Image (tube, rainbow, N blue to C red; front, side, top):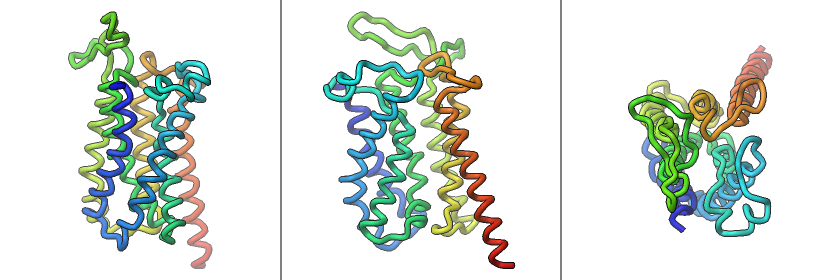
Length: 252
């Protein structure tokens, strides 16, 4: 049962921590109103999405369909951070409909929560000995336990989970001050776009340290996560360029 705890409990814990942290840097009227919807809807929705997306991600190792989805053992592991991102966006959109909040404004406000969730999520991955990196000889390499009963461990590997934790914490420290310094107001999608690009770049880079460990190349020398991250970056850039061009045309 302990193997389930890092995933089953750290995701809702990350959501709660973010809701407590978010008002510190941006004041948003009635932000507390969205709290029940996010907890009650977002937690199960995100857990299910993370599990489903992991199952269908190319290159992942999992049990058969029935065991993966219909037994407790199947739910003890096998979660995708892509599902966390999609689940968070869907949860915010649902909360905005329920409470009649402006959708883009709410997405701007809560998008930095991806880094809170990422730091907590990857801590769970490290404890659970999953999502580790490729074998390496660096001094801080870690041997992860594969079969505790037999004492079977990996060779020294990159602790990619901790790399992501440190990166996410650095973003959390810098982002609020950057938002204040440049006086970025929620509601225009700027914070959302910046967070999506930063998170996608982070995942794209860190995957190079995972490939050969718990990640594999599927096409073009990239893993499925890298392809998804690249697609997000391109989508944000194209959408931003389109909206800026549309805004100029409307002014003229």
